[in-house]
Amino acid sequence: MKKAFIAVVVIFITVLTVSGMILYSYLNSFSKKSDPNSEGYIEPKEIKSGEPFNVLLMGVDIGTVGSKNSPKRSDTMVIFHYDPETKEIAMVSIPRDTKVTIKGHAEKINAANAFGGPELAIKTVEDLLDIEINYYVQVNYEGFRKLVDAIGGVDVIVPYNMNYDDSAQDLHIHFKKGESVHLDGIKAEEFVRWRKNNDNTGYAEGDLGRIKTQQDFMVKMLEKLKSPAIIPRVPSIVKILPEYIDTNMDALDILNASKDVLPKLNTENIQKFTLKGDSSNIRYFIYEPEKNADVIAILRGEASENAQKVDNKDIRVQVMNGSGINGAAAKVRELLMNKGYTVVGIGNISGLNFTKSHIIDKTLKGNNAKKLASELEISHIEKNQDNLSDVDIVVVIGNDKQDVLQ
Image (cartoon, rainbow, N blue to C red; front, side, top):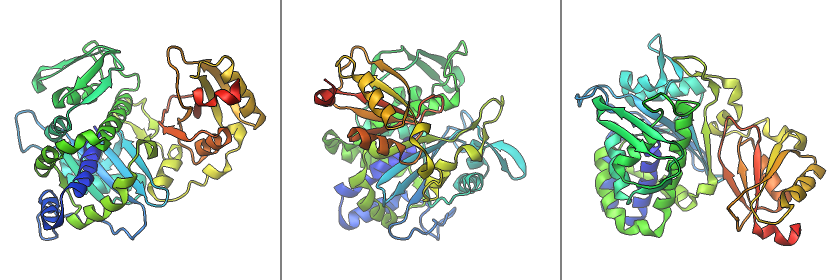
């Protein structure tokens, strides 16, 4: 789950609410391994001013049921990447069943933390993706639950019927598809952990499907953390963080990063990725480097070489009419086809009227969505990777295009 990333966001918020030496001491209190003299110290990779950086965020499981000190697997691994030049944030989720080599043996990547803690987890990710991890942040289930409670819970609409019971973990998940639910910490954990039901129905993609739900949940938490309503809750958030956060970011690292990142955190600037590969193997997810060139280019702070070579005809677009204006989608299709785009379909969004038009970027390839948005004079772009989609970009037409379309 994406609780580790959310914890980093909360850390940034505390920077604005606490001052002077009190703040510095506070930040160091949960940077347990940021002191070179401490046991288990992991030296961060140097970041030059203005350069992008990567943080490996890990949500660890409970280990062996009934044992407090048993090795903990990383139930969730996500790389948080920030580029100061573009002001964009990328979250790259690594499927926990990804096949890697650990100490000479084939293992799932989520076992790296159990075998060698954050140090081995970082090395395993770096070796797999051929990138550099600058920092890590780790948090456990209990920390996630307390954080959700501290921010006042999160509202979601349940995407699937969820009915799963695991008595050994005292885990019981029961939600109805389509219902609007206010999730406290316990319910939030159930929601983001669900993958299948007692009858084995569930996400068609298994853990890959769960990752998308977790990413969407993380964005909802981020939206809540950015709202003015969070201000009176900050003391509660500040109080719980030191007990549940483990990181090699020291106070100065956090202060410097927060001054640049926090003011620019915006859900519109977040790109959501999941590593692509072969999920047909019953035991492992097989990472395929050739399918992830754009993502790896982002994590390396490089411009993708493919992004600039895409012709309009190679960009597959779907146009959806959310304006209530008859024939709006057909008019936009004609406009885009005249500019050389491949429009694979049009349709109407029933029961909803959108005030503003927006674009949904499904594949996140270079600047394709920005280019199309410019063509249509649409300012809002939602970035939401969908590996199963047969389109690259969805255009949703809203009422703001009324003068043009009628």
